[in-house]
Every structure is written in C-alpha cells, then in structure tokens.
Image (cartoon, rainbow, N blue to C red; front, side, top):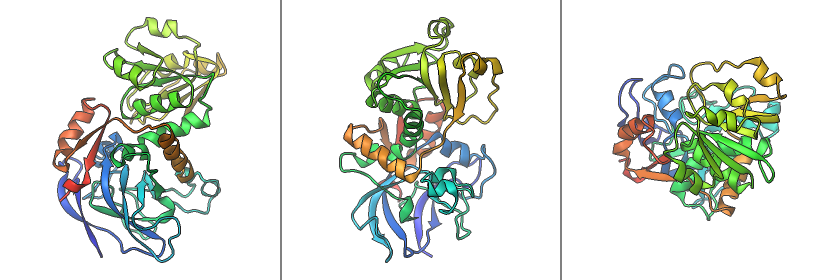
Length: 347
C-alpha cells in the first residue's frame, strides 16, 4: 500500500509529530492529489485531543485541503491531471439515501465519511490533509477556480462552506439584517460572505478589539457583547444570526435580538449543551437552528461565488514544524484569522 508523509497525533495528549501514513492505491474513480496547503480548523484540535470522542491513533487531521491533481483513475470524468482542486470535511457517503440524492451528502442518513478519523467504506480509518498527498473519490473533490490563490482557498473548504451554507439557506441578501457572533476563523468568513451577498452585517464580539478588522472585512456595525446595553439597543433587530462561537453563550439572550420570524443558526459546536428558554422562541415566532457544512454541489457554488467576488480567507501561512505552536495560538485566539500549513514543508 502506498504511504504518505504526514504530521499526526500519536495520542490524545501528545504533540503532532512527523510520521508515515498509508494511502490507498488510486482506484477507478479516485483522484490522487499533491497537497499544497492545508488549513488548521479548531475542529482538528477538538478531534485529535479526543474532546469529541475517542479516536484511533496515529491520526493526521486536516479537512481544508488545496492541491494539484497528479493522477486519476481510469473511470474519472470530473478531474484531470494538473487541475487545481480542493477537499473539504468529507470524502465519501452512501450516495443512495434521500439526502445524498438531494445533493446534501453532509447529512447522509447512513453517515458521511469524514476526511480524517472516520471509517471509510473499505474499513480503513481516514487520514487528513496535514500530509504530502491524499487519494479521494472524484465525487468529493471540488475545483478551485483560477481566481483564488490555493493558500487562501484552503480554509474555504470548511470555514467558507460552513458559513456560506446557512447564509444561503436562510436567505441572506439585500434588505436582510445579519449578525455574526464571534470574529474568528468562521466569523470572518461569515462577515465577508454576508456582505458580498448584499446583507447589512453586524458583528457581535466580546470586545471591540477586532472592530477595525471587522469593518474592513465588510461589517456595517460592530458591538461588544460584554456591554449589557448592546442587548437592549439591538433587541428585535436581526433577520438572521450566525453563531460561530464554539463555547457556551446565553442563547436566550441572543434570541431576543431577532426580529419577528428571525432565526439564530449555530455553526459553532461547543461540547456542552446550550439551554434555551422557550419564551425566548415563542415571543417572536423565532427559530433556533443548526447547520453543518454544505454538500459538494453547494461547496463548488461557494468557491465559484468567492472567485467571482475575490474572497479568500485571511491567513497566516506556517511551516509544518509550527503546527503545535499554532494549536496553542488558536486556543488563545491569537490568529487572524486562519492558519494554513505549507505542505511543501511536510518532509
């Protein structure tokens, strides 16, 4: 079986180290990708540290992958050698259930196969993009348009689609007031995308320290949630709130910021439950919802939209040997706004 060089976690408590992982042979419907860049997502940290459940180690994380096709299987029709491509949070699904047939593979009723730490259809454990190369079924590989640089495009495969999907689903656009809770890896893309869609955008952050950034990214307003007058001033304002924070917040307080029939959508995934006061929903026919990534078709739509509007992630490119340091900086909110690993340094 072919091997690849990767940075992987040896355990839930150990630093990621350089190692060798196995990759499958290129099958008839497979695409072999030379990875150029891989984004670091907060989900990577949660997963390798066992915070979202036990894992099999060694585990190479990474589901924001951008690279170049170097080999294709005999039956591949969607991609060719030399293509600029990306791989996001999933690499397979059953392709047969109602959700898969509707192009919503992320909600596969039989469970989609995550890019790392998942059991693939052949029984192997998937390994992610902190790696020299990867082999993926062509149906789960998307095209990165020429208008996007590969390094800035990599985080779009998770942070971009995770925020694009709910913005599209709940109709962000001209005449709509959208609030984004948190200005981090997800939040900064939510601001860029909602602004490009034509919505009026407000950032709700703990403090005003990133206010200048938020306004440059496309926000029309910026408020500190640590100031109690914010919740009084903005009560009943928003049609849509995208909560990108992966920590517990007072959901009932944020629901009060919604206008009639407004929706608060959670894309952040805190480990603990988020209690909701029923009257916060009933009072304004409000909704509290959740959203994952988008399907493959919508992910391609998102990339095309970003290319059209010249939108990439705000990134800091790092060599692979700084991954562990980057993890600590992510936890300290010391990144603006996404770390991207230069895969050429994985050797």
